[in-house]
Length: 126
Image 1 (tube, helix red, strand yellow):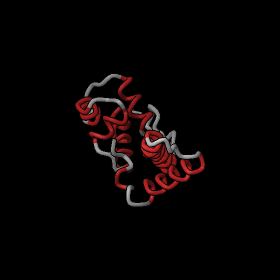
Image 2: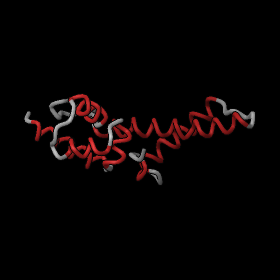
Image 3: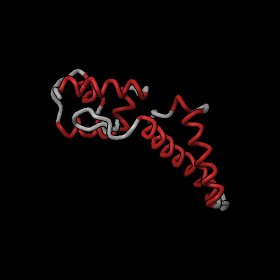
Image 4: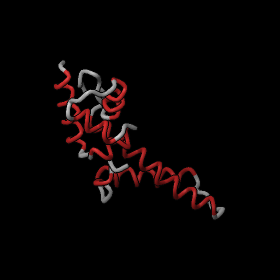
């Protein structure tokens, strides 16, 4: 695969996910200017390409290593756990930590909201 084909695959996956350049940069751990250079097919380090492709569920050839739905589910789960940890931290400060069953119910609820509910538009926001 030619480099331009890989860049086109990265752009296509970015658009499929509906992720902005800014959020792609934050979530992949690469600077915004570097992401912009990559998307314009300018010189960037191989490690940059690796970070971005891994984050997007692609390999160096632009092949899908993680299906789109699975990638979205993973991201929703990560964000749900983060949101639940905020609730758990607040409850712990008040000496009322949540039991595991309640915590899992909160995580499941947030995950569903990130995938299909009111929070769907924020799934790829850093």
